[in-house]
Length: 315
Ligand SMILES: *[C@@H]1O[C@H](CO)[C@@H](O)[C@H](O)[C@H]1NC(C)=O
Ligand SMILES: *[C@@H]1O[C@H](CO)[C@@H](O)[C@H](O)[C@H]1NC(C)=O
Ligand SMILES: *[C@@H]1O[C@H](CO)[C@@H](O)[C@H](O)[C@H]1NC(C)=O
Ligand SMILES: *[C@@H]1O[C@H](CO)[C@@H](O)[C@H](O)[C@H]1NC(C)=O
Ligand SMILES: *[C@@H]1O[C@H](CO)[C@@H](O)[C@H](O)[C@H]1NC(C)=O
Image 1 (cartoon, rainbow, N blue to C red):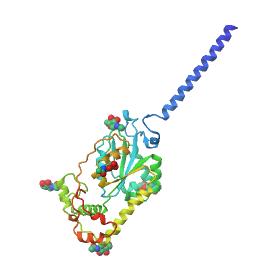
Image 2 (spheres, helix red, strand yellow):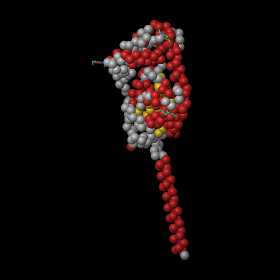
Image 3 (cartoon, helix red, strand yellow):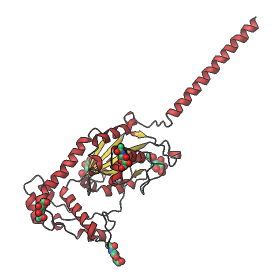
Image 4 (cartoon, rainbow, N blue to C red):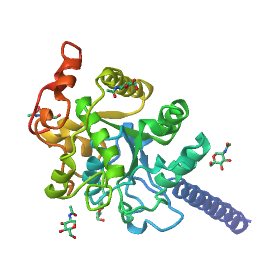
């Protein structure tokens, strides 16, 4: 009897232990599948912004558990965003995929917008800016007039859900921006550089040739157009104010390189020296860049845009 009872107790004990081990093991398995990457360096507030994409087109391999931040550069044409993007892309861990919504079908409706962004943020979008598997930040450049303002409510929802951070890049001197727009659109037809149109250049010779063209500005339209540009940027800031963001001005980035450090910190990147081969097209005195400088001066004097007339050689 004693032996029988002993055997029974032992049996129950072994069985119970076995069951316990099996259940902990399955519990652990489930845990492992749910949270494949546990980066202990992530702070609590960062959790919604940190991603571990699993691209369909390639494997992130040993960098599969490197956290990735999503961003979008929100800007306007001729505000230095092309240059800014080349700077960002000189960082080994950043892919900024250009103006993907310049293609109209991609911004036809909110579902095509979302489909395109999903592909970019899942690292399945391929451009010359695509990097290897060890990315830490991925994004693209979006102009305000490329469906961004039109679909702002849905885009804000998407940015919130996905944890996308916004980098606003504007230009302080909107008069200089207008000169750049006029010159760029003139060159689309004139093709001053040996018959090819260029929006951005890589040598001072090319910059010099393009800057030779001095646009004539319509003084009547000047104030309405400056106001329109100013209102567009104010509206964008208003729409996206609840999205995690940083606001940059082209002039500040040119004058103060610590701004680039600020951007890298904003994207939680290891800070590096960023470089670009692009050369500024219009540099020098404003009065030398406009054909009817006197009219322009006349039109802006005494208005809130008067400060745009001030010449700063560096800009
Ligand atoms: C959205 O636009 C795409 C591309 O133009 C089109 O194929 C699709 O049918 C549109 N979807 C809706 C819901 O309108
Ligand atoms: C940046 O890229 C390098 C080289 O591919 C990689 O070793 C490093 O882990 C990456 N850094 C981050 C923060 O992802
Ligand atoms: C245009 O072409 C000429 C002759 O081929 C060359 O010498 C010159 O450098 C070119 N200029 C530019 C701006 O590319
Ligand atoms: C300026 O633009 C207005 C409105 O488009 C036009 O009526 C006017 O003729 C233009 N003035 C000049 C000098 O081109
Ligand atoms: C450059 O920018 C940094 C950060 O925004 C700021 O603290 C610093 O005062 C600026 N320096 C100059 C010379 O404006």
